[in-house]
Amino acid sequence: MVPGAEHVMRGEAVDCAYAIARPAANGCMARSPPLSHSIQHCNVHPQPGGRQCALLKKEQPMKVALGADHAGYPLKSAVREAIEALGHEVIDCGTHSCDPVDFPDITRTTCEVVLSGSADRAVLVCGTGQGAVMAANKLPGVRCGLAHEPFSAHQAVEHDDANAIAIGAWLVPHALVPDIVREFLGAVFDDDEETRRRVAKLNALDALTPAP
Image (cartoon, rainbow, N blue to C red; front, side, top):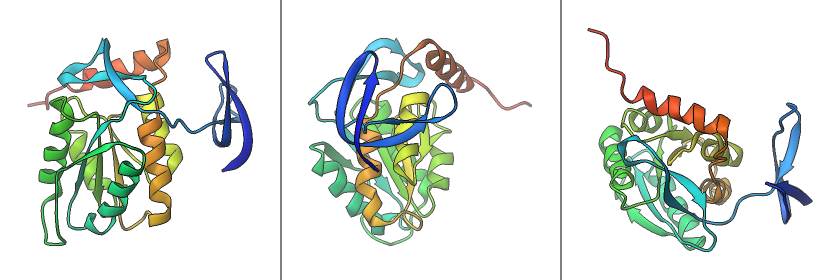
């Protein structure tokens, strides 16, 4: 994190306490502030499976579905605390102990809360995050990114309109959890021509069926 930065976002200068490196249009690394405001859904760009694009709405708390399997359970409380510290509401989708459970079941239960409109976004926690990502992205209308550090957490939303992230409890230190959660929940879809085109192509993949 770099102290002292000023970033021009959509023609408006925004001062921030620190900045995060992100690719610029010329391929170099530019600096942009973490996005600390919440989002709400709108009807400008409806998506398949009940998905709707995220547009910036300041000072609006979100409902966040949180699910973890037994491997992710040891990190779950840290994730919950990070979400609630930002003023958001947690919808707890389990599990509630280290007793073995199947990650596809937890993932589906958690993501369906988002698809139904009862939650704005989802955070999934398993051992490495890999199983949760695979399960989540099989659900039409869910776009889940793997976020083991803050950059990926906000980039998944800004460029790919992700409505879920997966975190690996075996890989992510507790101290990094608040940064990851903040960047994910504060990020906003870029919503320009290129990102809309690419996300539309992602949505179209939901309609594919396996070859006979």
